[in-house]
Image (tube, rainbow, N blue to C red; front, side):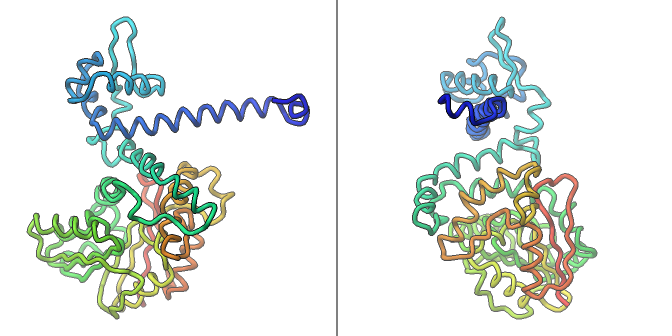
Length: 360
């Protein structure tokens, strides 16, 4: 730092910020390695092992020992794995495994960490969009639907029947008796397939822009022999099915639509009188200063910039972004014709709001 700069700034504040940036770099690196630990099942393997050498861990996980040893180094310095230098053994504490293994779902944060490398893979396209505008299309994201489906299993599927659907009074009973339901932006259809299995008297339809995701959902439904479900690749902004459905759901899907206002209006038209729209979306404020203390505020803006916003802009869309916020969500729902919207939250879910909008 130059002498002139040193005289014009608060030195203690500058050094504290430098320390925070170093911590940020370490934590960003740890997130990448946590993703690797999830994909290689090293966390799952270590959860079942006593303190063990890198050789034993690598053999149990079926991975190369040299790579495992370097990964373990990152995990030790990140304070994720304990290390005994006298014995040369590594150990994953149970308290850490409770947030890092597949058995820990829906609390498996290692699965969520996969979004970091997925988003980083499109950085060049994002930088180009910063300079020239436009966006990065869905097709540019490797593994996105695979990772999103795994995340959906945790955030939606795991609590769907016991926690999310009961937010709507009487919905479980109505689904048991038989409803026509539509899921907007269904992805690979994990939530829809669960509903179709749980409520065989109801009929379920899933629409998504991605033909890859729709093909995967259709194949899985066929594999499970479900006759009360269908999938179709469609632009959900152009749905024209007046009074067709009793229930429409959208799980973490509206904010990244190219034309969210048109989508919400199409949903309102497609509901029968007395029908319900259940929308899960990111819990945040539309005002940035109110998100400073959000437990995942930086993550929300980052995943928005590197995915949600940019895929919308790539289609010439509005680019609402993941942090569009509760205020904007209520504004757009009202604009679509939903006069009374109940905003609910679940105690175990720190990232989502659940909007319940009834069709009068």
